[in-house]
Image (cartoon, rainbow, N blue to C red; front, side, top):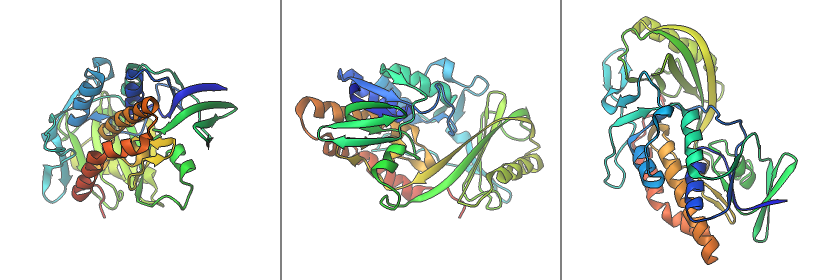
Length: 347
């Protein structure tokens, strides 16, 4: 049976942040990813100011040019705007200061598949893709992880596998995990023929209950326009996309060509839960989501702190979970602050 000090499930920003911290401390770690890398992910793929600060702090560099969209590399915070048919445009805030720190207001427009793969490579950790974790058992001071027909053994297991975390579901079966608000999200990419009245380099937010219970986002990714809709259970999101397309054509003279691809996910705004015993959670799997669903910065930050707590535990023999929980108090406080200011749902 293959053995490692730590196994991380999920190769997104939370998993990579955790892996980077562990590798920096000389810990043997393996990252398991269920999809083929580089993999697409349902995400607007905009690096807000806090993410940029954290990349420099933990990884020592900015994201490279190779992961950026080329047509609209940057989005100014003042060009992230909400629109309604009565009052027109008004500012829409997607990031607020944390602990008194104000972050850069020029956001970076990237391709999420390329960004995540770059971040994973920068972590320095070995990884296995197309490896779906189906279960695990804790036996004394080790965890046995089952992935298909292969079993792995580790001292600590980290679930960094997003809002639909398999690790969290196994750790807290249905009915035992506190329920939170949950919306289904669908993103569709269409070949862009004309932006019409939409401003180049902008990000438009529209609330329309006929389209969906969640905000609708529109912004450009190279030669494509990304349309994002969301709603509660029972909402037909493909119909929502068609309604949003019709609104864009009628109100903004936007012309779209053929669809390129769809991406979907479930966004759960559940209370933070950092794990139990030798199984820790980080990023969205732990409920670490900031204002209006932004999760990249929270994932990198909590992932790093999770990794540092485990590294300390491996060296000192202390239980890393209380250390991790203590180290994340400011993240939890910021989540509460974001929840108090959230402007995400149309109902």
